[in-house]
Every structure is written in structure tokens, then in C-alpha cells.
Amino acid sequence: MWWTDLLLYFFPELCLVCGKRLSRAGSILCLKCEYNLPKPDFGNLDNSPVNQTFWGRVPVEKSTSLFRFEKGSPYQVLLHELKYHGNQAAGLYLGRLLGQELLHSSLSGCDILVPVPLHNKRQKKRGYNQSELIARGVSEITGIPVIPDLLTRTVHQTSQTSLGRYERYQNIKGNFSVSSRAPDVNGMKILLIDDVLTTGSTLEACSWTLLNYFNCRIYIATLSLA
Ligand SMILES: [Zn+2]
Image 1 (tube, helix red, strand yellow):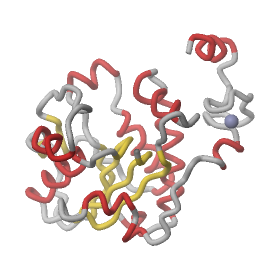
Image 2 (cartoon, protein in one colour; image 1 turned 30 degrees about the vertical axis):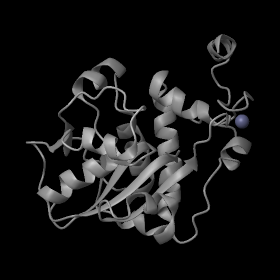
Image 3 (cartoon, protein in one colour; image 1 turned 45 degrees about the vertical axis):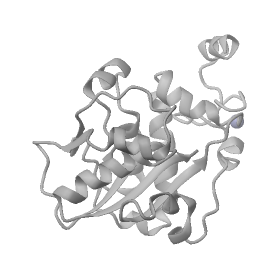
């Protein structure tokens, strides 16, 4: 909204969710909003709803998300900032939070982080790939290296929001390929990183692209679960 933009212009160090002044440099949330982030309590990762998304579709070892994305939630602003308002600091910051969650799980044993790529055209327009920023934040905390160009997106996809899960996957399954500059990642545990998990079609397509090319194991972490 215009007034939040105006406030941020004059007082850039404000919590994105509640608008309070921030005391910590490089953060985008105050301590209270960070603490109240709607984190899903998955307990055992094996049965998490994130894991269940991929059951019967693609062999994903384990997967998790940092927070739940609910319509009308004040936390919705985080993804908007990251994807549409050029707020790259939000990607790094949320990536670090995701990294802290991963430290306490078996996903911290992965060998490399691979962000879901954007098509060149879209990345040029946006100026960055939000999933790569998240991966960089995760890497800062976990020490796992990021390989941003392992996968490339070969087809420029228009919006898929009107399609169901099956149609989305049919639409997107041929859109990724292993980059010609890709290092040999045979035998590795690959942690795919994306911003939002909705139907899982994009991550399914990325997973199959890697599994068909390499002898590897796939893990998944996203910022939010829609
Ligand atoms: Zn706050």
C-alpha cells in the first residue's frame, strides 16, 4: 500500500510485518515477529505435509518449509517483498532463518544447495533469482555450498495459477535441463531450494531432471508452504 511504501521510504529500518523500528542491522523483522513466524510443527519430517506432497510422484528423501503461507496473514508481505518489490535483503534474511531450522534436521547433511532456476528472461527482468538468495542465506548458516547453475530453465512459463496439479506438472515437466557447465554431482545429496511450495509441480520437474541425469538423492526445503 502507498502509505507503507511512504513509511519505508522515510524510515527504512522498520519491521516489515508490524512496522516497529528495528534495532538489528540486516534484519527485516523485529524479534517478536521473528519469534511469532507461523512455523509448522512437523515433528517427524517423514510424515510432514511437505513430504506428503511428493508421495507417489517423485522419490524425495525429506523435505521441509520454514513457515505457512496463509492468505490475509501479515507475513504474506515477506514473499511479496521478495518477489515483486526487489527486496533482496528479505531473501537472504529468510534464507538464514531457514538455515537455522535445517541445522536441527537431517537436511543439514546435504552436499549441495540447488536453487530452482528462473528463465533467463524473467531473471533479467527481476534482476535476481529469489530462490538463489534464499539458498545463499541457507549456505551462510549451514556452510553447504550453492550451485546456482546446475539446472537451467529452458522454457519461459506464463502463469499456471488457473491449472490443477496434474495439468501444472504436464505443463512444466520439460522445462528444466541440466546445465552444460554442471559439475559432476553423482553420489551427492542435493537440497533443492524454492520460495513457495504449492502443488509441488516445479520441484517435481526439477527433481526428475536431476534424478534422470545423475545418481543422486533429492531433498527439498522451501521458505513457505501454501
Ligand atoms: Zn515486528
